[in-house]
Image (cartoon, rainbow, N blue to C red; front, side, top):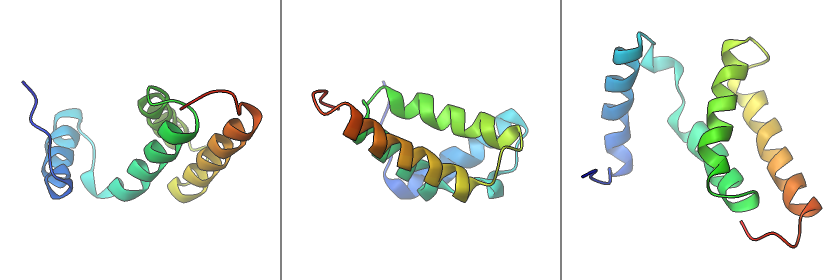
Length: 90
């Protein structure tokens, strides 16, 4: 059974996960990624949050931009989505 981690424990999980995947934990801004997930979950749908953060990672890995610009772009699109789909509850 999974135990819910307090925010400060996310750093430990990040270090373990990035080590497992052979990535650099210092390249991940937890707050920015969680902010994108929060906006997408509230403006689009909860299941869209992990999908969107995955796509954010793909875009970063494909050198489509930097984390700040790409995250702002996704958050903006989530707000636009909510405006375009007012009858949908996120």
